[in-house]
Amino acid sequence: MLPAVSTALVTAPGRQRSGCGMSYRPQFRGWVGELKTIIAKKVFLRSRDYVDLNNVTIPTHRGTAQIDHVIVSRYGVFVVESKNMNGLIFGRSDDPQWTKLNRGYALKFQNPLHQNYGHIRALSRLIGVQRDKMHSVVVFWGNCSLETEMPPNVLTSGFTTYIKSKTRLLLDEAEIRYVLAAIKVAKLPRASATHSRHVDYLKRRFGNTITCARCGSPMVLRTARSGSYAGNQFYGCSQYPSCRYVRNADRLASA
Image (cartoon, rainbow, N blue to C red; front, side):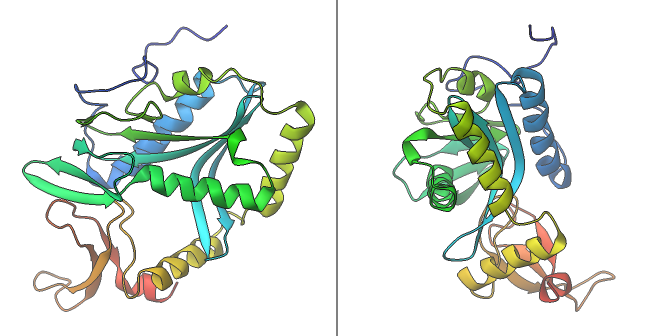
């Protein structure tokens, strides 16, 4: 029996217009979103039925792919893409980019359904599991709402409820053991070298920029004009001022 806890993480899936959580300082939003995902899985998905793997980086024919969460169960392999955003979200399944509107600023970001399809395709090729036994789940954390009709696997809450709604048996016990073992063997170690390899791949894919860890937009090289860091270079999100994420250029150059 599930523990009796009070939480907004698990509600009926569907369109959310009243927001999807508290608003946090930008530097903490990513960490808080990931923590919410992990806590929800631990509390509402029984470990004997669902085995969850977090932050899985796998090699691909183009470089690497970083998957936020992989959940393996009798009901298939769930590949979860987690986004941390504030504002109003607009987009359609077939749009290459979606739009976030926040405080009058419009920000375009990669369609997370397309992004997660790439993750599923890469994982399917790597471990040899058919894609019809895999489920794509996109969950938004933050003070956001979905303003256009979205497919049921795009959520701002209730993502564990959505996962538990899948009751068709797709994998037997032997297949589950195989999938877990295959991922364990194939995934890259969780170390700084793995992160550097993924950053190198992003540099090759996007030229002299990297992608913003907060919104997925390209980042551009800039030079500080004032303050104690005047003259120093840094990478800033191309969607500034809507997104103010920055990275140290020296640290990326040495990656």
